[in-house]
Amino acid sequence: MAKIAFDVVDLARSLIDIDSTTPHEASVSSWLTSWLRARDYRVEVQPVEGDRVNLYVTVQERDPDVVLSTHLDCVPPFFPSRVDGDLLYGRGACDAKGIAAAQVGALDKLRDAGETRVGALFVVGEERGSHGAHAANRAPRGSRYLVDGEPTDNRLGVATRGVYRVRLRASGRAAHSSHPEEGESAIEKLLDALIGLRAMTLPYDATLGHTSYTVALIEGGVAPNVVPPDATAEVNFRIVGPATAVRAALEPLAAWVAFDDVVEVPPVRMATVPGFDTAVFPFTTDIPFLTAWGEPLLFGPGSVLVAHTADEHVSIDALRAAIDHYARIAVTLLARL
Image (cartoon, rainbow, N blue to C red):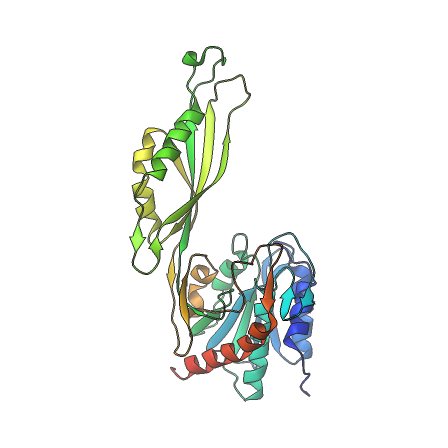
């Protein structure tokens, strides 16, 4: 089949202009499947749930040794693409539809050079629950390396922090607010626990730094004239080691609150290759849930500082450069086999 040329910016804009906010990825998955098959790629549509699917892309029938991967879902709200100078704007421009386009460009470059040992895995649901990654991990293809795409300013990730989200739950006793001594305020207990949290020493790692946290949600009380019998707070920790170490550090707060584990994602350390700047990143990725796909690397154009914002964008120069970067990373990894 004759090669059909394409421009990475045009492909990125086509992907961006299809609303695929989690969990509504079916349209973009279908469009990209047709686009890739028209260019003679083999695309396996992998069911996730309902009409949600992952795309496993190969050059030939053989399973590749190096897989480039990223996600096709985005956070809300959707907004379409536009170009302003060197910048491509739109939801998913850097997180991560621009990355998907650059990875396809790298596959094209490698295929033109006769390389068939590289493929791609485009998953759904990374922004909320990593459903696609979990499904893919149940159907590994024997790849040796997984190059995950997230906005890293075209630097290789050395490590990423994990997440531990915990709910602090305080219980009290309701009473009329004119007689607070007859009740027991759950909100005051919760506040005591949060003040105690601020004074705590949390785990530290020489590479990943200090554990950080955000008190993200607080709920409590039933009415302004009632001593509150219940109150909760969800605290999101960016962890640098096992979640159990943070949970142990929180134990003194048990004087005021009980604990419910909500989410746990471990920190990850990744492989690198020579010739690229490296960095440690505080965000999480699908890598912890794709362990069956080979040794992980992390790389992508764009900055996480503009991901999820109303100003999301990626430099077109960085996007085009990422094609060569992904191809060079893949070639270097293949030479290790």
